[in-house]
Amino acid sequence: MVAGKGFGKIILMGEHFVVHGAPAIAAGLDRGVTVKLDLIDGFENQISETIEKETHAHMLKALEALQAQNQSSQKVKVHAIDSELPMGQGLGSSAALSVALARALNQAEGLNQSDEVINQNAFASEVIFHGKPSGIDNTVATYGGLIRFQKSLNPGQAPLVQSVNAKKPLYFLILPTHQKGSTRELVENVFEFKAKNEVQFQNLLESTEDLIRKTNVALEEGALQTMGQAMSLAHEYLNAIGVSNQALNDRVSACIQLGALGAKLTGAGGGGCVLALFENESQRQIAQGKLKVKGYEAFDATVKC
Ligand code: PMV
Image (cartoon, rainbow, N blue to C red; front, side):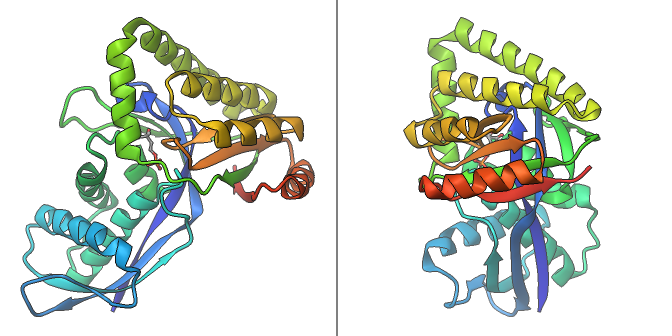
């Protein structure tokens, strides 16, 4: 039996606008998805009965897409999935699963694929689930780290991926709403919003590009206050295009009241998670305790420099 892992991710800034050509900044999480599988004789892929039924259809489709990419007719049995990520919460669980499957297939079949090929294969699998993914999720799920990502507006041309050097560690809290947002639907809704509000959308996209530039510099200089302010503004822009909701807005406000430097939804929205930045470990711990008293679950994630 072989195992493959994909990382989860947080988008620090630029979700949704990244689908429309703006850059975005994201970081890999240590948490991810691991799958275990074996090659089998037969004409159909199999998923172990021990794996949650709800995920079977999703996994079979992902396997089909990946095997088509590999031009392979070799079938497999997936024995186990170990997910350290809540599913459908904006933390890139679907891309992490695609990468985990791609890596496990690569190993099982001895294909010796580079990370670049794993990433391309996982993208093909993401297209099936999300329709028009920017490619940021599968890229972070493959490489991890802290990156600036910009998709090419020419179909078929590779995105621009650059690593970002953070001068200081980033102490985040992640607050799940436990409401599931459908990335596909939310991305489609934003396309509709753009069609109806072209000028407003263009202004928000350009303002987000400006925040990304500031955030990039702030990360490199360790200017966490500036970065926090940019995050909170980014949340307002996401709210303006209709992807936030009450549960997200409540958590953003609570984090700011409890001393966060900035807070925003992360991922597709419509539920999912809030990401809040803190000055240091002790500020984060104090806020985490107070959030718990208010009834908000929050777990920590640190992006190392
Ligand atoms: O919610 P997630 O983890 O699927 O993140 C989606 C990020 C979007 O920018 C909304 C879509 C994309 O493909 O970039």
